[in-house]
Length: 338
Image (cartoon, rainbow, N blue to C red):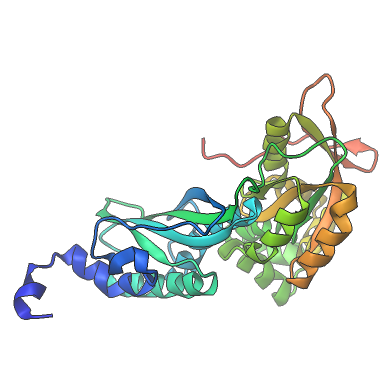
């Protein structure tokens, strides 16, 4: 680049070229030199679109590693694609940056984001950068592809379907509690490994994209768990017009979460209602359950049956959580920003 051309670039242009152009590996991104991108969906596929933002002081702590923040921003969106049975194609990135976000922070952020963009085959296609009085805001719009008509919907569950969930539930909510109250690790009897596991699950989601093809082949409906199992399952029930009956004893918990609940049984509520699990709940016909479980396990993703969908009763579609003979009632069934 000659000196005259370099001098004509704005500071924003130079920021984008330095940190984000290396992430724009798809030819349809045009090296981020245009103000739009172009994609051609794979033959016979529908596009699946999703946008989620994370905000400093709301979804991550100001002292979190910026590389991890970048990875989390992408992964919360990838989780939605997994729940729809879709494969990633790419993403758009919008940043609102306060003045205390410097070039060192951005370099680490872009490095973490780029690491996951490569790992999940989900390149950057463009976006926008702005200044804000704060806090930092990172918004990603991700797009994926799914065979025509095969996207898993919230409205997909049918009465008689088995309710399954990937991974483990409640780790992130308990990890957030540990960030806010580090002494809780002692009260819960956690060793260092258990404490670190819960903290890591809050810091960095584990989207279940590897299991997306198996979910698409065998499930009738799906959604990701971002606002808590109880609240998100209730949303699915309303969309499908059915009721879900959950056996709380079957909800999969990590060893660290089990230790915490054994020490403080009241933690069952935040474990079931807290956000940031980024697991997948799905409805599966009984005849497809064994195949789904086996195929998901082959990708390293555990799938656990935790209940069943039934016809809605007089109270309408809802999610019922039973712990032994007791039906649980939650003070705050779902995380909500409002």
